[in-house]
Length: 196
Image (cartoon, rainbow, N blue to C red; front, side, top):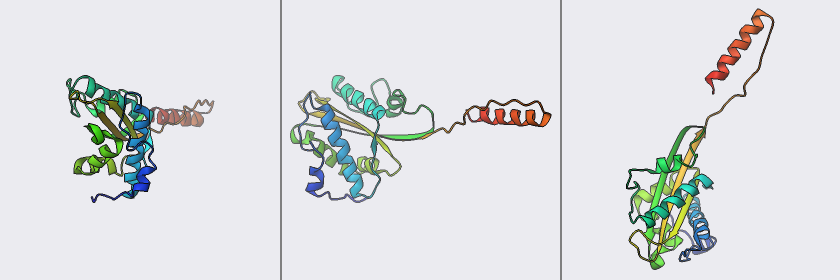
């Protein structure tokens, strides 16, 4: 997959892209990262991601944990994975199928800006593949002031996801006095139970 070149004016549309994160700017930094990811996807002719609160929650909590506990890995010291972190938010509830991916990063100085972080992911084949994967439809991000090594900077977590919600049929209440009608009611009830 080739790296797409993004015109400066397109990146300028992502407010705060070159902002160095602070303790008070997490929400604005998260918005900038998601905007930049979507600009990269647009340039690669891949559908735009929709921000989902559950994924924001998982990403923000993990970027904070990376800084607070001074480690940097997709697996937490207790063995937790992105799937477990996202599952704990309820994102998978009511799904028959799902997929998730995660990009992590941290930087100091100008390497800690949202634009620098997204650029570094684009320069890494694995991170770029995750960011531009067409199967993903949802995104959430977390940006925490500080780094896993204790330096002044920012730590990023972006979670990508997709899910297929289970289709349920409404419960049908049915009664009949005829034998044929009763058989139809039983068959309808059996179908409804199978779809729950």
